[in-house]
Length: 272
Length: 272
Image (cartoon, rainbow over all chains, first blue to last red):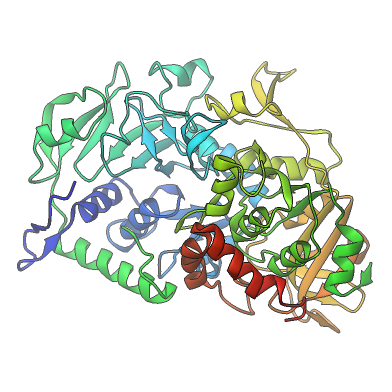
């Protein structure tokens, strides 16, 4: 879907894209007290936007072992030299997973995937069957344990009927499980996915069933559009808010970040 | 430990059918050594690596591998590893068996190997389908708390190959920056080969806690300046992000890939 550009208030005619709305909405969910395990791409953009706007003291941790890092440009890979140079310290990969993630030191994990279901379980492994996949995706990486052991999980994904599916082809990273209540049965005390931000709306888990339901709709998006871009019968909260649009400052800082990133990588690799 | 040329080190250390780990987490990926393995025509290798990256994409595409043990098989920030996908999805140039883990599992398995343990025990794979497609993932009960814990065999590669910044004249090796799982991978292996940017009289000023592998943990040291390109060597050269982006097009097509490998790997010697 492409809703085109929309006017941002107070921006002197400044526009923003649905992708920028998504990144900004995700960034706003983070605070300065968070210790955040960051993935590459959309999560990295959102986390660094938060750091450069309202959450300057946020602790960003990348699975390459870089603790408390403050990159000037978005990394292309999880282990770019930039992350190490701007980090408080760099530890080994076994240490990052053992002491910091499994040890329960991370408050928020940011994830995405190729498919998500109504209980915010994620697939980043295969489309089709596992042994003869139609599309072989990269796989779990850190995601399976990030999903289990961060205090809570935020998911950022572009919304579409082929990615927001009734049934995952493969469950890589546990959300609330196929029944919605598996975390407790598996002995997990972390919250799991509490937020799903898309280019159309924001979803949060139903307090009883843990099904992800629409709690906020981005400006100019119709309910019908959201339903058409969701593979299950999507539900809306009793009171649905309108997502505040990106401010001129947020858009400007995000675009500066992407421009610096594109210059640094020698191509337009940066993605919101 | 002996100082060898790259062709000597590979021909002595890597044999057909071996289990081989070329490690380096985005940083210090031993490309020169991987290219030499391709040139020497090794076959039926089990390739172990957290992130196969471009080096295993190239090795798989050139037919050296029978099995791949990994946890995240993408081109970071860019997309797919097309040669790896072609092998898994269509069996080209030959069938590729996969043993798929999460990052946490791989890190723990190397650590267990370095520790002389038969297996690694950790909190992992909770609710993930990965546990059902990888026969090496088992669960055991903690004898004290009763908690279900994931258990996987330790990694014990026949040979581990890494790239590092410096060796001294005695063959001790210094690694700086993002250190990944290299120390664990070397100590887990039956034999280890290290390629380095330079051999120096003295490491110079360094932290008392620097990551140093004593010469007696290493079978061979090879001076191979630029041996990590197009990945990077902290303090020597940056990651060639533009090449990682360009690789997407090169690797997408079998013929174009073959021509690129002929021109840039097969017809070049180890020192070029």
